[in-house]
Structures are given as structure tokens and as C-alpha cells.
Length: 153
Image 1: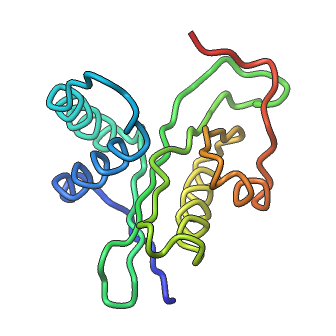
Image 2 (image 1 turned 120 degrees about the vertical axis):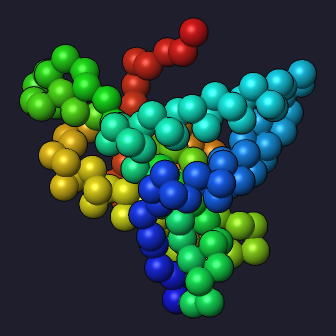
């Protein structure tokens, strides 16, 4: 399959929102009592602010016909510089998603490669993510390693 990746800007907001909500509904299918309208509004506000300010890069994967078959994004933030991140710039990969019928055909890999290239162009030294079980092997093949000593509250 021929896969192209295209960067998505604010002009793609309706499509970004459609795909973001699709991802959230799949990933958080087990969550009860989700206020989907508020979640949608908050995500739209996030995209409006962060795409305009350069704090987020979003992209779509398209097949040979131009149809969108996947999406992804990377959030940028600054942390205090440290020996493992001299610049303090971090990228958080998120929303990496491919349609079920094209999974296992390199779509996710192309999306991640595009976003890593974006991060490297911005001198981002630390890139991290959360992963589903199904994608762990892909991330490991790319070179991601498990992080230890991290907790969530």
C-alpha cells in the first residue's frame, strides 16, 4: 500500500476533531459516564491554541486515493534541562491511530516516523509516549524503550 503523510493545520480542524473523537472512543471505550461534548469542546480549544502556537504537530496518513486512513500528533513542552535532555524540549507522541482494516501495513510506522522527524527538526531531545499492547512491538522496533520510575496520579 502506498502511504503518504500530510501535516494537518488549523484549516483541517473539522477532520482533526472527527479523528480525535474516533480515537478517544476506541481507546476509552470502557470508561463510564464520559461527557463527550465537553471533551470534544476541550479538544477543539486545545487544537486551536496549540496548532496556532506551535505546541502541537498533527498529521494524517492517506492511501493512494488520498483517503485518510490514520492520524497522529506530537505535543511539545519544556521541562527543566537535565543530562538526558540538555535543551529541555520534550515531545509526547499521541493519537497514533490507523483504521482497523489497514493495521499491520506500516501506517502507524509512517506516522511515527513523520512526527519524529518533526521533533528532530525542532531539536527535541526527549520523545515519549503511552502505548497500547498492540503497538508495543512497533515502538520497540523504532527504538523506544520502557521508562521506569514514572507514576500517574
